[in-house]
Length: 110
Image (cartoon, rainbow, N blue to C red; front, side, top):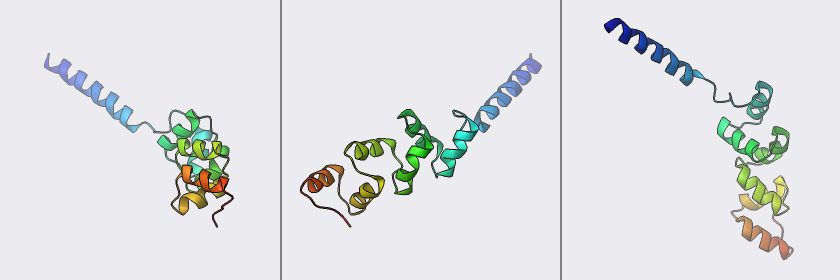
């Protein structure tokens, strides 16, 4: 009986250590994981972009301008801002709603 418990404990230890050692990028093909890593995103950020239909190519300009949330990118993009424009407004402390309002009045941010 005692030996059986050791075997079960050893098997469970191997199982759990194998699960903990798995790559957080395992949800996607290696080439795609490399592309996401190449633009500086972590697995959670990359997964969020993927779930929202982005490729690393789509996300790259937004990430380069400081946007690491797919939801934020979607909002600014739907409001017809480019990554550069959005980063300028956001960098000056404007919310998306404020940026939309001021831009509709002909204002821009330098």
